[in-house]
Structures are given as structure tokens and as C-alpha cells.
Image (cartoon, rainbow, N blue to C red; front, side):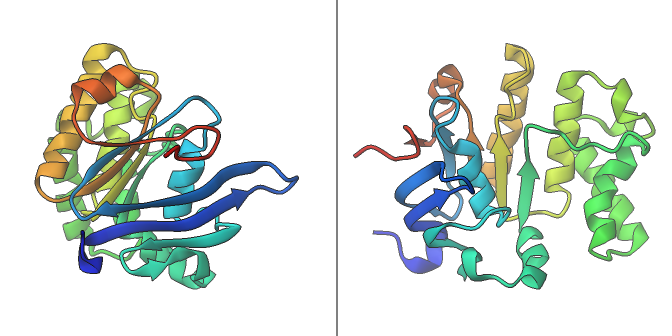
Length: 224
């Protein structure tokens, strides 16, 4: 049995009901240990995105507890949430790239917001772009990139603050097989240096090809 200090994420009797009464998640109980790579799968509407949003404190559980790095995120004060998110790398389906800024500036933004010195910000941003093979495009506008390159840019932005946990929502959903495999190989390389990953995907082939723990959601529940 894992000790508490090895648990990065813990859900205990978590229910999530949105305004209007739709219950997105029902009685979720699971833990993710430090350094695990976990796939969250299930059909559209199963609750995959909601689960990730709970970890990032974008939404709060209706009942139950969500603990991330020892903090009960459902009880965090609003002012404390940005400090939690500094430990997280977030990759969502909507890229949220800034098209009035360069590739390099997009990656620098998370560090700029947290007050990193400019020299260190530049160094880390270029290192992140190098990891995703985009260093030669640092001056380009994101709108000029291909879909696969934009996704790699999102990965660079997510890892620039060297997070302990990366949350990825359908990171390969709109990519062809080659690009999808490339993104997954990047995730595996991060995992090999101790980063904990939660990857939501409906792509069963991807899960089969890349081994990892799997949580199968069905109508908001984890069947026994």
C-alpha cells in the first residue's frame, strides 16, 4: 500500500454536480502516486475533463475531497489557487495560445506572471522549446504553426515552470498518428524524470500502445 507521502493526487467520495443538476462525477475514489502516468478514458461526456478540472481547482467538488500535493483543493481560498497551479502543467483541448505574441513569448508567459527574472525566463523558455523541437521557430507567430506544432507549443508552455504534475485533456485528439505518437513520447520522457501525468483520452489504441495505469470512466463513475 502506498504511503501518504507518495500520493500526489487523492479523490475520496467525490461527487461533482453542475448548476442545473447534471451530475458529472459520482463517488470517485482513487489515488495517483508520485511519478505515475495515468490515462483517464471513457466516452464523450463520461467526466474526463471535469476530473482534470477538479485537480486544477478550476471547479470544486460538490461533496468529497480532492487532495493534490497534500492540499485539499476544494477548500483552498481563491488567493491560494494560483500557488497550487504553479505546481501543475495544464494542456487543455482549447490551446489558449496568444496570437498577438511570438512562440517564445507564449512559453515565457507563465514565468512572467509568477515574477521570474527575465534572463531566467528566457533561459527556461528556450529550454522548453528545445525539448519539443520548436527552438528554431521561437520568433514565429503561433497561428502560422501546424496543428501538431501548436500542440507541441502547448506542451512547452505547460512544462516551462518544471511542474510536478502535468494534466493533459485529449492532447492528441486532433493529430494524425505520427504527431500523436510524438506527443506521447514527450510525455513518457517527462514521466521518466519523475513528472506525474494524468492524460484524458478516448483513444484506446493510444492507451494500448503506451503502457500506464488506466481509469475507465463510465457515466461519471469508476465501475468496480
